[in-house]
Length: 171
Image 1: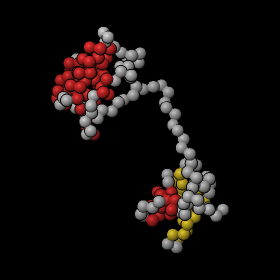
Image 2: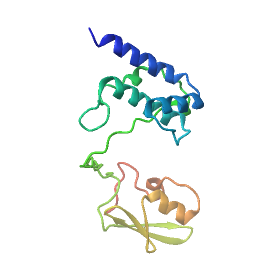
Image 3: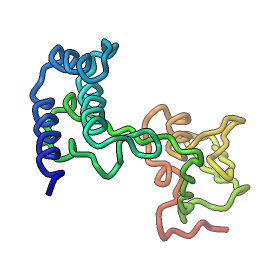
Image 4: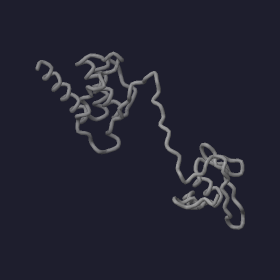
């Protein structure tokens, strides 16, 4: 139970940070870091000072950052304004997180298929690509973007080109 008073003290300091103005946070920064802060961003100052208080009380983890499981400032009741919410920056890792590939929408035909539609007397041809669509030599990320380029107004691309769910593509 020796560590309990220290934890309460650290938590109390972090709760107090949450009530400070930007100028008070800048003063506290100077106390804990021994230099003047460059930032005037309240959430940034709060987060960095909270980490420093924990670091001084508990030491550093192997990566040079406070132990990620010891974020006492998470227990501080946060105001619901966008300005007072601190972003937690994750330490940089050497291997990036792999991106998840989303399943291809079943309404989109396979790559290489040409989708045609007659609009105001003109035939519109769109080629399906592996990632996106091509119309008149220009690539688009979605059928909705193609429809907007053709009509000048926003459309649901699947509806515009007749690719609604369950509809036979007529191939």
